[in-house]
Length: 314
Image (tube, rainbow, N blue to C red; front, side, top):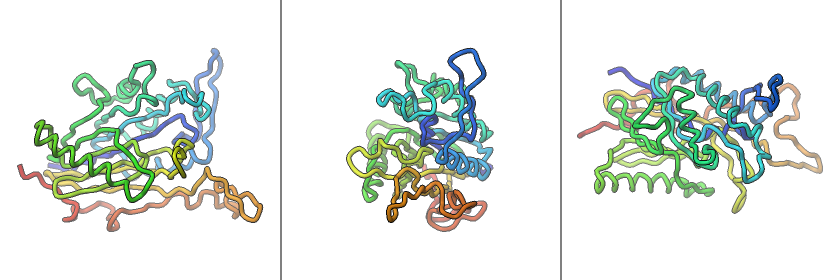
């Protein structure tokens, strides 16, 4: 069997002021007139450049999975003041353009949070799945949970998971998910997975044991005011996950992009420092993107390392 690539993305939150957006987009006008044009802000531009870099590195995968929340929705609780446009058609269309860049052979979508992706009971991720040509699985373009097997490697994929603002507790939710999965396998004869994929928390974390690996995927939205509820907000992790699978074995890597803090005001000796505009002219956003490898440095074509191997034995 040939090696296949499986790419995992999540939480685009397209439409939010601090989420990924192409440099220039046309929005539907309320009246029959020429479309409105919106230009991305510094944060959105930086996110888009990071995304485009990832597409160039991992493009044309065998499988692309968007694990929930392609759009941010209308933000009804704050009257839409944080969205570029409350028009869900615009948000869905922009998110589709982001998916189309990958030219993936197969696409899967899962369901995220109703607040972001449901309109009066209508699951917009189902609509989005059909828009991007996602696989239709048992009556759904976007199921809540998906069991996926590629080249003998078994994935259990679902959007929601508990989160923590404290770094030392961030591995607890995914570890709990793995333990519950083993219980479900033993008691309910549920599909047994080698890898659990979860999202929703907007940070990257992983844990593992001799039975399986669990990963919480990074997002494509930076720190928002919502993250300040209950204490100092935490910054999001931005990036994606890729698996290379063959003969029941896998290797995986995370591409995480380091972003300077855009949104927190900074004052030095009475002078306001704009973090999106460095003091040295001509070096704006120069260091905004760089690779943070996980574990050992990866070769251009990752090898199957013993510590990252998993083989089915049953």
